[in-house]
Image 1 (tube, rainbow, N blue to C red):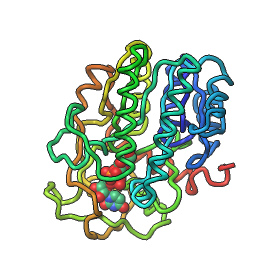
Image 2 (cartoon, rainbow, N blue to C red):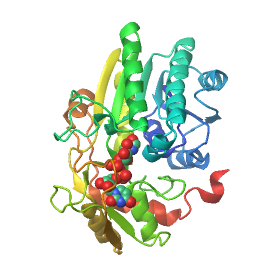
Image 3 (cartoon, helix red, strand yellow):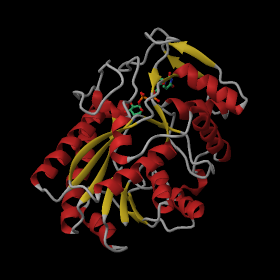
Length: 341
Ligand code: WQD
């Protein structure tokens, strides 16, 4: 089948393009390159030997969407990655986040109708579980967010669910990601955050590369084994394969399903630091600093529904997540850097 990837030049989009091509599907990417480089898709083609055409455009623009749906033949399904995704920024720019992330979904749904495409997989997030402290998190738990970014994910889930209720031919799979880290083992594609990274693994990689002096560990007074925050880290290649399973399910099953994409295991900040140091044979200097506002102690997934419904489960371990993350950073000290154009 031919799958349209909105935001397809990004970190998870480009890895999903690799997995879709390797599964024998075709891909078309629509990306406004606001937070991505076209180089990522050129490297997807180099890794797979397949085609990953890019339509440069915006999901909030009907004409750009029509171009993406028409340029390379019938689109059988969409995976919707495109959206603003910085938690902190969403607090200072809520209107930008609500307008962009919701308009993109509204316009995409209308374009799908115009082009007779009836299956969508949506990039949601464990952030919709808010501050629930009952672990592991299950898809039928109550949801509620603590920041505008999370609310845009929650609202998009609501919009998609209601549209599938109104149109019985529409298929929706809502994928709630936990903490995607790592990179394709080739080291040719990976996470390329702009500015100082907010997230743990890209920050550690830049400390390892000497671009940042040390890691600030946000609190060691949590009720966890070593006092630092625990999260469910998942290899981005496992996450990508989860998207292939989800889109293959969606095209066969109308209606809505919510699915966690996690490993079901939680690791602390210091577990990540120590594993990264061991597998890459280097030191990560760190200081303990106060907790980051909004953080909770422990978050990890009940991953059983993905296994039962999609016949998918994560299979890469923390060692490979840390090794692959550093391999990408080493080979690409400035990310896609000079190749950004
Ligand atoms: C992980 C752990 C921090 C940085 C975020 C978003 C979530 C999702 C995934 C999009 C926590 C600690 C971090 C640092 C640290 N994104 N940490 N020093 O907060 O679990 O989730 O990314 O959907 O929506 O909220 O990920 O990588 O920021 O933090 O100690 O410099 O690492 O306290 O315990 P998080 P993270």
